[in-house]
Figure 1 (cartoon, helix red, strand yellow):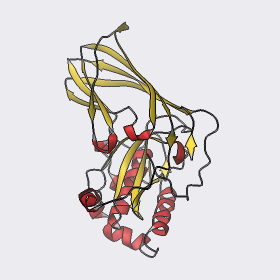
Figure 2 (cartoon, one colour):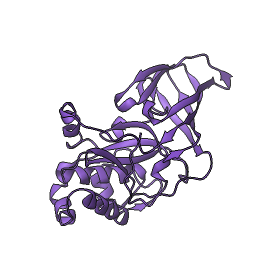
Figure 3 (cartoon, helix red, strand yellow):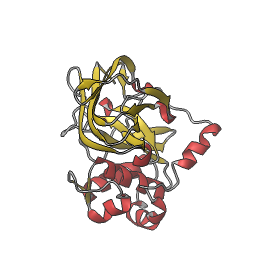
Figure 4 (cartoon, rainbow, N blue to C red):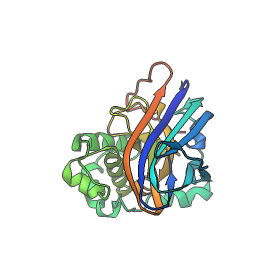
Length: 278
């Protein structure tokens, strides 16, 4: 299924107390579609700032932008228009050279300590047949186990804290799905995305799980159709997909506004059919 023109972007307000370098992960991944237009607009204390972001390539076709910022209030606006968006790419084939990647996404990570959940995950979900049926059951289990509550979790919370609290936001849902999948020996990873149809609008996080030779996108929040998602970054957990990273200097994030929309009607998502992100 294809979606028409897709418009994504964000506005960030930063208080830069000392000269700083920041890394942004806000541009669509190169695999997400055809990039028709793209622009960065930077201002410092309300005046245009002539600083050119340096573009870096990251794993899974992600794009990073490194910016050296002077002291002051920095406002950054990013806009992009994509065409040929499709959440059903050609089937992905995994040769022996990809075994390292699949092993990586079976291992515990900072926010997804799957080794601590093996016994629990087995007790809760091992009765389901392995493969698609077990994955579908796991997603439903997470959706019923958690309540979506804005501001209910902190930046250091892992899947364990989310499970114990019984609530969280999209990244917490994704972390719990990923950790439980790895505990059941299914390779799983996190993806940051733009999500047309999401309310309230923000950067969104979903899980991808490798079964039947493909990475299937799953979202236990059920908040936006997966077919219109635009991949930004992919990694072991949120530590690999942060939209803003400070690598030097003193920077405070004051405000974030995210935009994501598509031409025409949003696709309907049953949340049971397989969906692959580009």
